[in-house]
Length: 339
Image 1: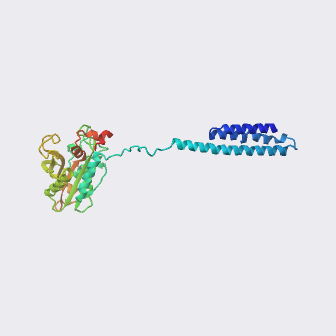
Image 2: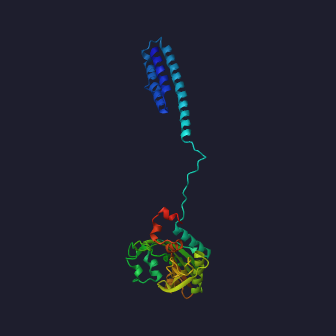
Image 3: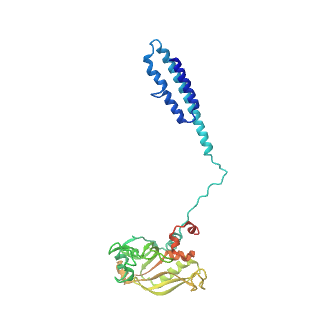
């Protein structure tokens, strides 16, 4: 029995010294000291030992167990120290090396343009109003004086969910919602997404952005509209920018006009950007039609107002010299990093 214990002790100490990992060392502990370990088996077999020899054998087993446990503890400490040293060596950071470059994103040109518009108009006292993108035909067409046979109401131009529910084709419905239940003066803009059933090409997209504005008060005239848009154009395109009104027809304004700005590249002399005309069309505007005022619950005999609307993409393309609308929707970092 004594020879067997000495053999177990020698084997255990040799195995402990040869363990290269904490997992291997744990396997050694289980092999010799576990419930089914070699030294534990000796203790379980004490019943076969002569009664007079049991105290000596028991004391020897306890001594060997203590030696093995002490050796295990020391080896565990060594292996942990080696592991920590190895991690420190492998994970060491050279603080003298340049830090990896972090790419910082930039605002999309559409967002930049929209933010600038909002900044200009809020600086002029306009409030920002929002409305649903899923709209009713009443707010999108009827209340805006668009007759039932107007081309914009065709299935080929508009995304309908049902006969009376659609994706808004303009942000003008927000104007009606802003008028309802309010007493003028009203001065608001409504930037946001709109949807039309267009095939994507260089100048069209089924989803794009608009910024529309509305002013209603007593004594509002076409002169107020022109002064507002002239102030906006100078702030947006440069102090020397001029504006030009051309007669047009919109169902929700009367009189109506297309509004051009003088080319901010050539100053109106004619260049590639303005196609030699010296002017760039950017928006439509006019005096709010009396029927639209009535639909918003406002008496047209007491109040008057003007409205305007522009495509944010069109302005962005003009400002940044972008010749294809699709470039702004493709998320190509090489293109977006230019702005």
